[in-house]
Image 1: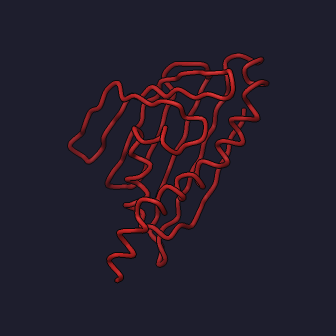
Image 2: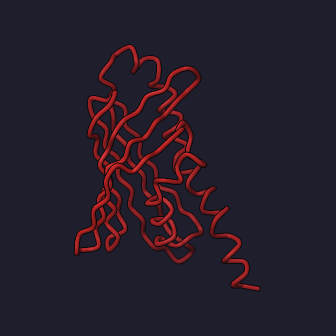
Length: 156
């Protein structure tokens, strides 16, 4: 059962990083393996929690798979929790948390998953592992692209 955890210190605020990760519709623009992402359903609670049901299509060379997950965006606590609903996995869970620091924020990413098919796991397992290891870096690079111009303009 593969899992991966990383914590990165970034120069952007926890609110900025939360907003970036919560913008799931933009994932195909920059996230490794992500070819498409569609929101199926979106619901708000009165407690600042937004729940999405999303379908993500991932691909590598000639292999393409889609899966559905439930994404809970906890705005007050700056946490994101993703639970697997349907697709090629036995299970998939990932969590994000964002903590403010004096120089920006710490972004923690955790993922745990297993493919239903042993052969798909053998075929895609190492590719997914490499991609997940690059997720945090991809989000940090995206934040640099999006937030750097506004922060530099504010200092000028």
